[in-house]
Image 1 (spheres, rainbow, N blue to C red):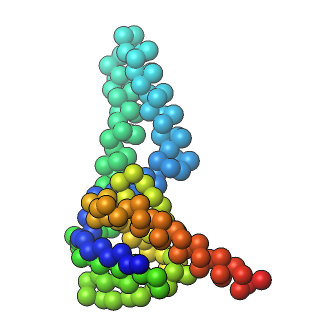
Image 2: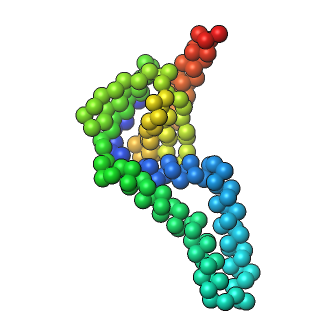
Length: 166
């Protein structure tokens, strides 16, 4: 079986992956508690608070709902630094073939650490620290089949590696 995807990396891809990561970690609990607390405080104290305190409460709410996502977006833009490479990923029974900026690499399934399946993206984590983001628009109708295929291949090779180490 073979899955081949070709696309241009976008800033929004990195932003989505970073936001999913932030909201699926301990940071998410803190963010949600702070958002709920700021909304409750705004509603409860609005009528009796001085203007400076209302402004502080609004700023506190914006910190987690506007400012933090904006900072993540700016970091994503800086990370790409204007370079939006064309990327081709080909997933086969033998591994992953990667072509980016005219450079070609071939990775075996042993070098794939895992997948993170999110509602709008799938992230493929590699042992060398790289990760590849596949948007739903890139995956099309193959998302489910691709995730099943890749998960099976990763599992097979990691089980084989564990058996060899025993």
